Amino acid sequence: MKNYSFIRKITVAVLTAALACGATACGEADSSQSSVTNEDSAVNNSSESAELKVVRIGCGGNNGAEGLSESAAIAANEGYFEEELNKAGYTAEYFGFAQAGPAINEAFAAEEIDVGFYADFPLFTAVSNDVGVVGFALANSEQNYAVFASSTSGIESAGDLEGKQVVVGAGTILQKYFIDVVNEYSLNIDNIGQINALQDAQTLIASGDADAIIYNNLAAIRLENAGLGSVVEDTTDKPQYSSAVVAAGRSEWLRENEEAAIAIVKALDRAQKFAENDPEAAYETMSSDSTPATVFQQTYSYDESFGYFKPEITDEYLTRAQTIADFMFENSLIKKEIDVNGAFDNSYVEKALAE
Image (cartoon, rainbow, N blue to C red):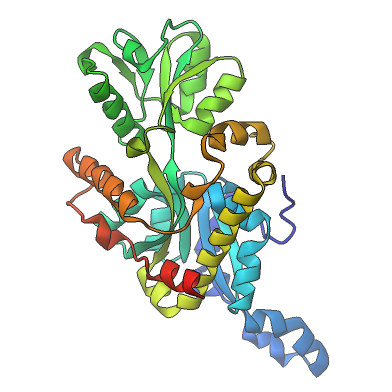
């Protein structure tokens, strides 16, 4: 795993204090440093803060940038974000949110962050609620999901789910994937026990109280490696069921800081090229203490061109994204229907890749 020496790691406790002190005090450089008596010392000590504007970036987890995933993790760990932002006159500050999407949306609404990396599902929630957030790039256009079955369940394929107890995160993208699987295999959903206890999924599998989990593919592979069962179905060959990890920003901030958004896109593009040119190094740089490089290799080796890490917001993805937004509305997960074309702005990607 790469060393985060260039990143200020922010724990939940520090984040709470940061939110209390307000966006201006926590997110902007203090120009009063120039009043130091020794003029040379003042210039040296304040030059970086005076020249570089702070981009406040939100992501999942408790430990700031360690919560980044996919190409965003590579861009942070290899220093691409900092390099590209510095060239544009910015620097990055990372905020971790244990509650991920919902908490990031709250931070967006409070204008406590400028950019967030999270799934398209919460982005569509923000758009439906008129939070003033727009997706300006993709960090992974194929966020994959899986059906994980315990070793004692007798489940050999997704077609065997009837009569079983399945952990499904209600009101999440995992619920949509579950319904996709039910429809594909013509299963009777009333004959499948659904347990809405995703945080306890591993315990339920280990105790035998659940037979299967509808899970993020990487998490499912982690359980498989732990010897608790196996992945019997996933979306790696069915991208129509996958979702995306997006780079989103506050609309007002994006308008006023176009060069920063372009710099972030450039970093994501460099990350994709890094992964394509050296998959083994990519797996290593995405790894962590809890998730070794071998798990990332199992997760992403189905296509080591890493085309799904390209930042472009393609028409193919937007078609898939609309099915997600429609599912959310039809199941009362968002207040109003949305056209996903309005949830994204591809102009930052176009400008970044044209330079």
